[in-house]
Image (cartoon, rainbow, N blue to C red; front, side, top):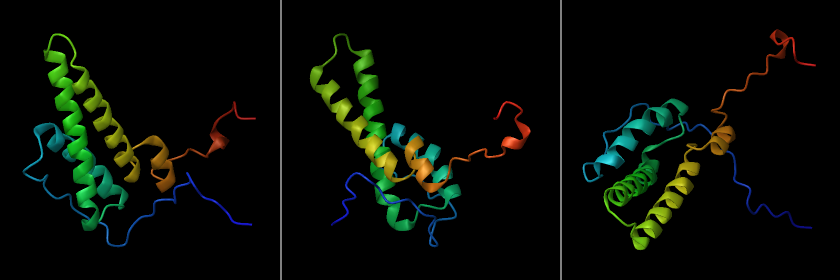
Length: 129
């Protein structure tokens, strides 16, 4: 009998070739995308899961977040919402969410890499049965 692992992602592991310093944001990224790059890079470096070969994927994540924020800004300043922009906004947010999961930037994916610190010390809690 075969074992199907559809839908089950392998656990992320710390990499031996992980970057130790955050590179500068690529110049062609939008201001929102550069802001996201500066926000997430210290986290990825600290978790030691990002390598030089992963930078293109991180760049795509930041570009998707930047595009979603730019579209949201455009929709906020306009009068009636443009349905084409709204659809595009949804697609960029979905893409950003999917890419975020690849790098441990969502709560579920953080538990796969052990980045979320669990407090297993129940001895100090008098309410634990």
